[in-house]
Image (cartoon, rainbow, N blue to C red):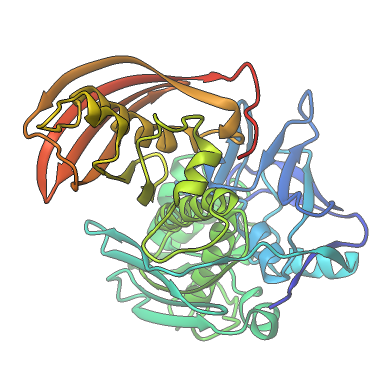
Length: 471
């Protein structure tokens, strides 16, 4: 796998008809600067809106992956993105004068050939690989879908498909070397569907640009000649439709014995491009589809964002610690004697955080609360929970050091046991709801696996009037 970022050398274009919308469009690939990523631009719309190719902009996955921003959309992006990832291109602008890329022959090969015509330029910036160092899973019991991403110093995808349809049966395929295998073994694999799906999609007004030549149609039920003629007319196919002895519509020969499974690998490569950065991982998938692919991409992108956030403030990686006290001081404005969280041990962005306060007899508040019987004030336990929560909330902003968390209300506060010198106070905060800059949270303080205090908060994030000095 390449170590430096890559773009293309010149602009190249391709015109054609979209699979589902049936609209004519031209797609133009253009070079892009380092660290700019992959972006679609709808040049036919006012303001030329840009849609970043990441999972946050997925708006539909019913029959392909659709990206959208406001009123601007681009349908069926997976074959385009697969070509870009398969050729290890990091930075590229994709201009579209329509809502859907040309379907071509139903594979990624037309885009691969076009990008080869453009040529490649190696850039100076290193690739921003996300190295998967923990298992990431997606499971859908109803559809019997399982996908798992495992640690690997490379990029591999292994897929099994079995739709419990005897016309297709069970197939599997795997990509083990992106550089050696993608162009020849996977880019040419065409999209596929069952004959029953073609009929229902046509009735629903979809696949307006579909053709027997740009998809493998698997005949999954008996069909008479007059029904074939009716379907031919409905699809607008000029030549006569026939069923091959192998159970496919027309005489379009398979490019690979397991071409449907290979196309599922292709789709997954394209959908996982929406993580927004190249990954190093081994992906194992059973019965994947666009919805499952996108859900896995969301989980992996959240992992990437968390790693990026942690790396920004925690300069030295420490076992069992997400943020040490030095990192916490880079994020929070609190200082002695009012910094009441010593380390962060768990963090799930936009979900929950776990902090630790090591309660020492040297805490200044013990001098007066209470002499001879030191007890940590309940209000300071709530404050410690609030500070821990602040770290969870501030990750939503690019520059948390320039924002403050103001608490608007504290509800249902309960103090169940006293916190004493020598206690290790575990501070757990969970995000319940978010509306713009306003947040609802639940906090729980624990000592020795026993809840000592809990409360519900409402908080707002505000801009700091002055930028704090570095410490």
